[in-house]
Length: 295
Image (cartoon, rainbow, N blue to C red; front, side, top):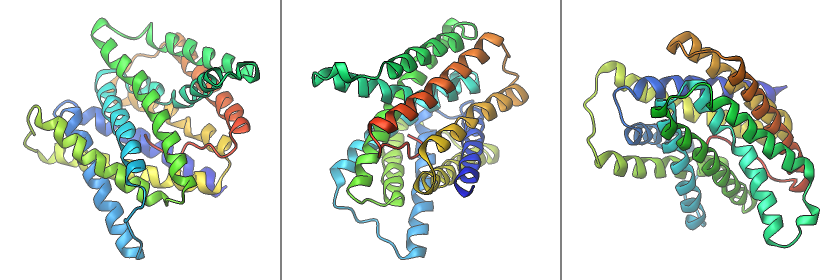
């Protein structure tokens, strides 16, 4: 029950973060939003570690670097997609990460010559997921929104790569807070570099509030999700994680006036079903694989 409550809280906070990102995108670029999201996260985790007497020193800097590169790329693309697409569409595309991981598992089996051991149900889940994407995108997007759609799809793929690297860090004994800290630090560096290719905008109180809220909501949601995966069951957590799509759909309609279509809703249902199936089958094939949180 505790893990379920943590996951429900996490999915709600991630959806609220999406609202803040979409509102902030009217004034700030994706690089700026990533920078401030990372800065707030790094300060938050640093203060938490100092208060608890922990340590941020790591013996695996190269692993953190690889995880940060994949995670930050996913985050930049996702924030860009949120600014360009209906909120629920952008959130749904990022939640394709479970389906991408299933595709990686299938591809790995083919490369090592064990394709005969591929679970056909996993293949069907992947195909169903991409069928859902076609339904979500086709009826709702204009020509100008397709770059955002492509960014959202790639963000899901990069998130899957980041999740696999976080799993590897967990196997060598890195605590969750250290993984989150170095990811936040990477967000600061990459976000600043990306923002400097244009301009850092001056702040208004509402704009600064949105940036701070993005960082606080994202970091809190990530901590809740990480704890839920540590104490709960992976499939149950994954099921509740998809509540983020429902929340983002509700927020999109109420706040941004996003259109409601039956076809797009059907696509979201297919993606959720495919993602849950892929999670179940993947966890049976690789028991310690887990989805630890945002990008």
